[in-house]
Amino acid sequence: MKKYLLSKRTISGIIVITVIIIIAAISSRNSTATSNQTSTTAPVAVEVSPVVVSPLSETITAVGNVSAMTDAVVSSETAGRVTRVAVKVGDHVKTGQMLFQIDDELRAIAVEQAKAQLLAAETNFTKSQKDYARAQKLFASKDISDAELEGNKLGMQAAEAQYKSALVGLKLAQRQYDDTKIKSPINGIVASRRVDLGEMVSPGRDVANVVDISKVKVKLSIPEEQIGLLRVKQPATLRIDSDPSTEFKGMVYTIGAKTETPNGHSYPVEVIVENKNVSVLKAGMFARVSIQVRTAQNALIISKESLMNEDTGPQVYVVENNIAKLRSVKLGIRSADKVQVIDGLKKGDLVISFGQKKLKDGSPVQYK
Picture: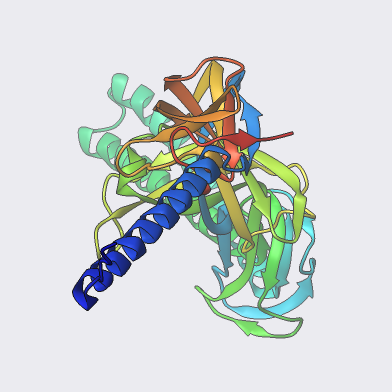
C-alpha cells in the first residue's frame, strides 16, 4: 500500500482556501442581518396637522413712536407780566379757552382812548355830511359858488378818512388788548406749561404745548419689498408695551413716495388710530403696528413650521398610510404663523409639522 505524503506548499494552499471560505460565510451572514434590520427600521415619531379651510389675512408689521395728530406750540403775541395761570399740565382745554393772562391795564386804557377818538371822528364825519348836503342845495339855488361847494366836499372826504382811521385804531387797540389773554388754538390736552405766575414774556415766547390725541399717528419705515403691498385706508392695528392686551384700530393714512433713509431701501408710512382711551394711549409711546394688506376667504391653510426648502421651492411632508411623502406646493398669502396653499394639497391632508427634518421621502412615521 502506497502512502501519499502532502508537501508543505499543498498544506498552505488548503489553509488559505479554508480561511477565504470562512470570511465569505461571515460576510454573507452580516449582509443578511443588515438587510433584515433595514427592512424593519423603526418609524419616526412626528406631529401632524390637517389642512384646514379658513379665512386668512396677510399682514405687514413694523414699529414706531406714537405722536399727536395735532400738536400746537402756543406762543405769546404780546409783552408783559403773567398775572394769571389758568391751566396745569394734563388739563383738557377747548379751542379759545384762556391759558394765561398778561397784564392788560395799559391796553385797556388804549382801547378806551381809541373808542373816544372814533366817537369824535364819527361826529365830525356826520357833521361834514350834513354840511355838504346843505351846500349842494345852496349851489343848486346859486347862493354859493363852485369853490365853496368843492370846499364842503373836500371837508367831508377828510372827515370820512379820519373816521376810517379811527375805526382801524380801535381794532388795533382791541387786538392788542385781546392778545393779553393767551388762548388755546385747538381742543386738546396741555402737554407742557413753560411760564409761571409773575414771569415776564415777550412776543414769540413759547408758553405752552397743547396736543390733540383723540387721534394719534404712528410713523413707520417699510422696506421696499413690502411697500408695494400698501394702500391708503388699509386696516391696521396697534399695540403698546405698557398695555399689550389692548388693541387699537386704525388705518394707513399716508404712504411716502421718497425714501428717507441713507441706504434708500425703506419708505415712510403713517398710520392713524382713533384713540378712545387717552389715558392709555399717549404721544411718545413705543407702538407695534400690524397692517392688513391682503385677505383670502376659504383658503387652504397650513402652519409655516411645516414648510421645507423654501429657498429652492416649498415642499411639505404628507402622511399616507404611515409613510412620509414629500410634495411640492404653491403658496399664497401669509400671516405671522400660517400660510395659504394654492396648489399641491387638499383639505384634510395630514401635513407633518414637527419632526420632518429627520425624514426622507418614503420614511415610515408614527403619530398620535
